[in-house]
Length: 222
Image 1 (spheres, helix red, strand yellow):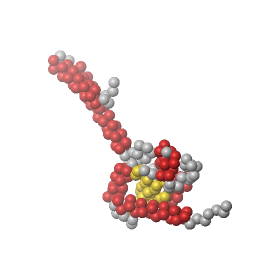
Image 2: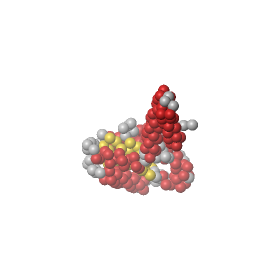
Image 3: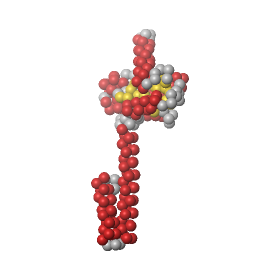
Image 4: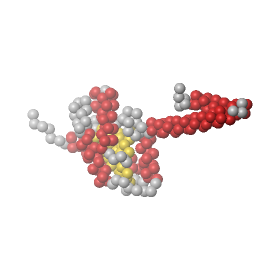
């Protein structure tokens, strides 16, 4: 049996307290009463530590995307609001989504789509610093918050991420590509919403440039 079960912990603590009172008041057995009260206090400490661990675990799970294991929308927005509210130090934000993800998902099924998202999450975590925050905003859209970074640093990371993603093979054996947008605080926005909007606009502009380039690419001779 474990004291981590709330009801059991309360019962044990109450029983020890009552036993201590009975031993001291009724039996005048003060050594036994002291032992009971000491055990009661120890039980209270154990329950408090279990409660702290449970709260920490709940907080961790509430900020984690269950599919990829990276941060979720809530974590990203909390960190962004904190970063823009405190001492205004420079930081950058990357936002990316996987090119042709819907087509891959539709053609090969949700299991393949989920596997691909997990691989993207892994690549992001492996290519950022320990202080960076990786989060999945939803669908195939991810973001990376880069403390104390500027546009140049963000561009270098974006290129590193693209190179790493290209090593992942999708179900159709084509290399995975992603469109990436960048926003830098404070010049691109003073609030979390402004920065996310700027990064998203930059991402869409990148995607449009790629589509235009593909549309204008010469067809190989037969």
